[in-house]
Length: 75
Image (tube, rainbow, N blue to C red):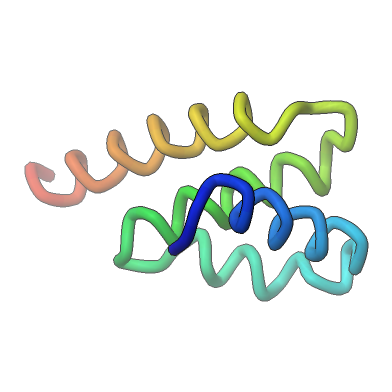
């Protein structure tokens, strides 16, 4: 939750922690809350692809999360 700047700052803090944060982020990526899951997925993407931009990573994670939730509801 929070502004885009807050989310970006939090993501960068997790990236600074490196792979030590990966398990926590993977758990959060499976959260029922779509915002939490998308933010965690975007942060994982940044952790694994440091040259990626946060905005792009968040857009992709939001799409993946939306598709995943739709599939769970219908499947």
